[in-house]
Length: 274
Image: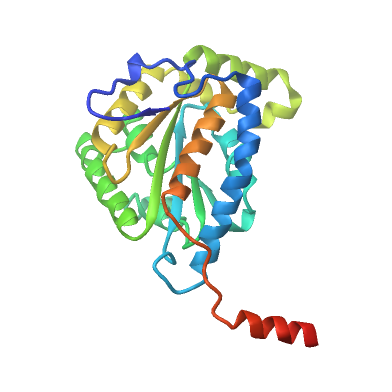
């Protein structure tokens, strides 16, 4: 994966690379399955702490997934986040805003889906659509779009200040790989539901979207909420890389299991006598 820092250029990245990993597909699939148990345990610990008063009570994770159509966001949700108890996960996907949503500021609908304490929240597309599609499709004035980057930075700083770790991921695929994946959907009746004719319209604007993403990285990769660009032509690698990011976020909370707020020995005696 690639952390976005000063001088980062999306156009210079290799979508087929596997940075930080020397194994092959079979190795990656094995390591993904092996690490799933630790992700599950740490998520349970996160949830358990949210039920008790203490310094670790108000913590959560927000995984923001962005990428071009067919970049693998759904696979990340199934294979990475899907390895934990579904009761500890929230999921939201942000499409074209409704009339009601348009009557409010652009973050209004986003705030309604933020993860509660103890949860991992997943945004399959997110508030960034309002500066990506908004910019490419001219859905708002250039002045309004320009102001949104700062609003987003303030919003994400607010989240981190209140205990939410924000993990932002761009799944980086090539136009050739996208074409192959869209074509595969058209050949399989069980995948027709995943195909959307609008995907071709977006594909025709590929360069414009790449430019819009570059502006996003330049303007919103911050110390509080940095961007990670994950090469995604290899689905197995993208899943492994995002799992590593989620695992790192959970480990960096340095949480312990909450201590019992009752007399353990007394409860053992009561149980034995029952």
